[in-house]
Image 1 (cartoon, rainbow, N blue to C red):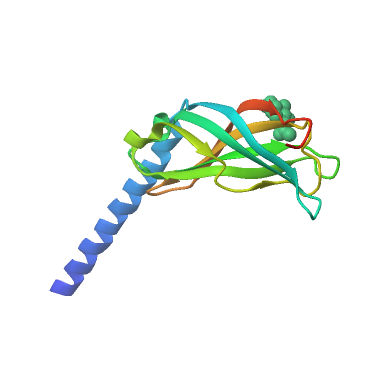
Image 2: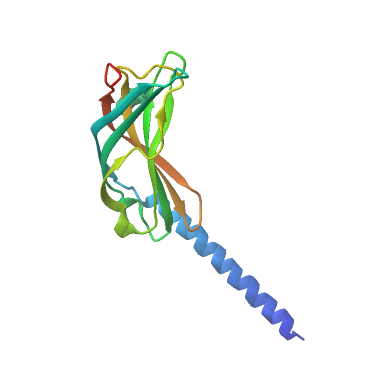
Length: 167
Ligand SMILES: *[C@@H]1O[C@H](CO)[C@@H](O)[C@H](O)[C@H]1NC(C)=O
């Protein structure tokens, strides 16, 4: 004789199996989304460029950032973390990465944006390597899904040469 408890348990197991299956399908279907994000970044102005008392270079800039990341959103997307990094090589490190701006996008409608900002985080080099330095401005994004694994990718948006002298 099957008790109520047994039935409830069987139903629960069945529900959980279906839930797990749906989660797996949602996560799997993400593999078929081939996003085509677009971004445009421009350095509008170098506001200051100094060598700090400790010898490290610091630069302040105003950036224009526009992007259309709507194609990153699927029905399994919880949110997208996006950041703009300055990337450059120095004699000491082949790759330096400094985050200048970031944001969290929770709605697809907000994934198409255009903004004019001063660097949100300080752009400081570990040394005095920034004069005349060629940098890449790279947009990185991390897609956090409702279920399944996280995806990350990036786009080198533009190159920029820093000023040759402090100001
Ligand atoms: C800058 O971007 C170019 C083109 O993608 C790449 O070849 C180069 O290695 C990048 N430089 C740095 C320092 O990341």
